Structure formats: structure tokens, C-alpha cells
Image (cartoon, rainbow, N blue to C red; front, side, top):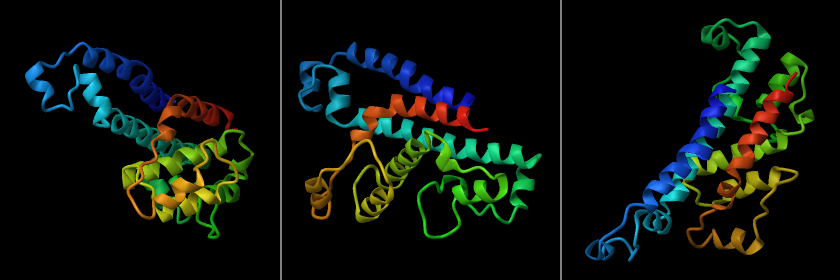
Length: 202
């Protein structure tokens, strides 16, 4: 939980401090010519999508902490003392703790937990949220938020999702660059969902 708290501090404490500082940094009339006519650094940060990419980093880190949390929970339950013990576990293929989505292959963390710990992650009331977070994490980490067919296919695999993509958006991304920033508005909720998810683990 400690690492998740660090993510929370970034979003709830450090980001507001950064915004306050940027708003207090004025741009001269001469400088406005080079920064889209903005009067302060915060306006430029917004217009240049700097805030969006900052939030992407926060969500990517949250996904990383989820992956790490699942790994160390599994290690504790299996009685592993170090990472070498985990490496010796042939069931733990590389990246398995980030594979939380429905899959036809039996090589997901859901299968691992069911087979080895006899715990169904799908029974956790916040697991659907975890699946969403990891889906968005991959979108931002590997494609900077640009929609593509691979994301849409995985998106449609999830039985329920908070932020439905309008059909016109799903269609337009095949012909032009289309960013999906909407999940970034829910980072605060996703942080709390993640805390609840780990607290609910037996």
C-alpha cells in the first residue's frame, strides 16, 4: 500500500502544488508569441497537453504498482523469500502479473491465482476497475493515448467499463490520430479503487 500512497501523493498533493506554481508564473508580452498567446505557464501547460501527459505518467505508475502489488502478494502467499524463488516458479512467465484481461489462453494472473492460491480475482468487487486501469495503462505506456485497433479489441473484451467510447470515436481513430484522454479525469477514483482492491484480498 505504501507505493500506492506515493501515487496518491503525486496526484492529490504534488500536482495541485505544481498547478499553483505554474499559474503564478506570468509570461511576458514578448513571450506570448511563442506559447500560443498564453498569459501564464499553466495556460500553456494545458493548451500544449502537458497536463494530460503528466496525468498519463501518474496512471502508468498506478498500473505498475498494481502489477508489483499482485506479484508480492503472490510471493507472500507462496512463501517465497526473494525474487529468485519467483523466477524458479515455472508458472510465472514474464509479465504475467500485468495480464489481468479475459483471454483464451491460460496464462493470466487470474489463472495463476486460481490454480495456485485457489482465489478467484473475479470475485473481488474492484477487479473490474483493475482491468480498466491496466487497459488504460497499456494504452498510455505503449501508444501515448492514441487509439488503435488493438486497444479497441481489448476494450470490447471487458464486460463492463466506466467510460464507453462513442461509435464515431471508434470509427474515426482508423483514419486519423485520436487521443483517448477521458480516463485521466478519473485517476483519483482509480487510486481509491486500487486501495480497496488490495484491502479486499484474503
